[in-house]
Image (cartoon, rainbow, N blue to C red; front, side):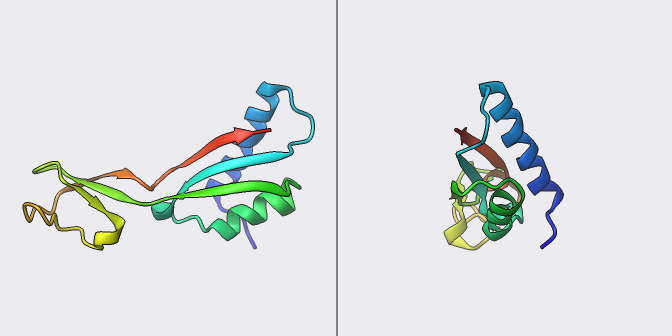
Length: 106
């Protein structure tokens, strides 16, 4: 499996945070990953296990959400629509579920 640019960025961030804490071997990692980021949890698991040799980790998946720029209604991933159910508007801003965060490194 080939790692993506995003996965390599996450690996760099994990190593940076470990270095700032003065950690030797990394024992545990907690990541928050947006479901709409395009990065599969399996790929992240592969990077952590195979490339970084970290066996204890948690990947918290964050649902995607949009905010209608017309009325401010929050459109959840479960609504499965880009059209605002409140006002019918089609202009939205992504407010959750796109990024990654290294929450914890031990």
